[in-house]
Image (cartoon, rainbow, N blue to C red; front, top):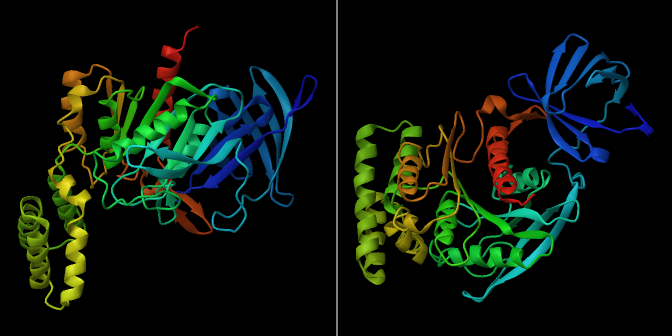
Amino acid sequence: MTVLGGQLDLTISVVLLADGKYFAALDVPAQKVSRMPTEVTVRGDSVLLWMPAAGSHYAAHFDAAKHELSGIWTQAGVKSPVLLRYSPMPAASGPGTRLAPPYREEEVVFNNPTSRLNLGGTLTVPAGPGPFPAVVLVSDLGAQDRDGTVGDFHLMGSLADYLTRRGIAVLRYDDRGVGQSGGSTASATTAVLVSDVQAALNFLRARLEINIGHIGVIGHGEGANVALLAAGQPLPPAFVVSLAGYGLTGEQTLLQQQVAQQRARKEDPVVVQAAYERQRTMYDIIRQTNPPQAQAIVSNMLRQDQPGLDPQAAQAAAIQLLTPWRRYFLTFDPLADLDQVRCPVLLLSGTEDTEAPIDLHQTALEKELRSVNHSTTARRLPGVNHLLQPPKTEWTLMNGEMKPLISPVAQETIREWITGLWVKNTPR
């Protein structure tokens, strides 16, 4: 684009979605514009690109033979001729195709002195001197890597990229016993995991490019409950974002998830109810019986439920059901200590979340928090599931296959809320 004093390079990334629409974003490196939302309208060989945030639009003709768009860019009444040349984006699964991000990325190791272990992670910092607001990302149930990898989907990695491109530093780390982190997830209770978050916060507080007064925690599922527990301790985070946090006890949560999975498989309601009662009995035994006795009883129950299961396999499965984490989580009440939370909290959940349904979980968290904390904000995202994914019609279509992505509305809601706190609390 021709501008006063020379030319300005710009890039518009366009991705075809499964419903035939397009997702597009504008990047202008010289002006520090990154991933600005762009609306796309196509009629034959006429293309209209509209960037509401910049008050700009680009009306162009598509030359299929040359793979070029040529047209007029209009901004603030000023019209400029612009030629865009096509270049394919790298395949998501191709080796060595990752483009260098427009921010600093650092592999880090930080120490948890309480548990005497090291945690490995990635710190991403926006370009520029800072100091920047920052967040720590905390994962959901189970042992997860720093990117929150589920198949081809990377919840934590994608969220970190989105926020860092927009001025927020992010620290994400491998769970205990995963990747570069020591310890064991199976032996770490929900309460113990709070010390990992505190260690991560202290690591960020020691970094020159991070604003020490604006460090928060974003937790997903159980990670949201861990974040809220950390907010009730000395030296709490400046804010907490709860993504699909749990509002029922651990036992109620696991039982409800089991029922949801069986209903999704369209199992007979009578069978579902019987399995529910059987599982509840097993959880009562795990909670109220000493481990050696519980292991023998649970192993016997598993063999009764699955006659073909050999004794060794039943013993191994029973041991997995009797980890310190599970024994604690079954009795964990996420509402018990919310009266200690004083920092601003954003509760965010999707209406299609079957693992932590809004009417059971977020409603309970919201009611309890708002009774003691007037800085609580709640948002419910239509069509979004537990992994913060939008409906499949909005997924990316790549190489003929639908690829999951984080709901753009969810990401922007998080960014906007954090930025609002930053602006509100930054002296002018």
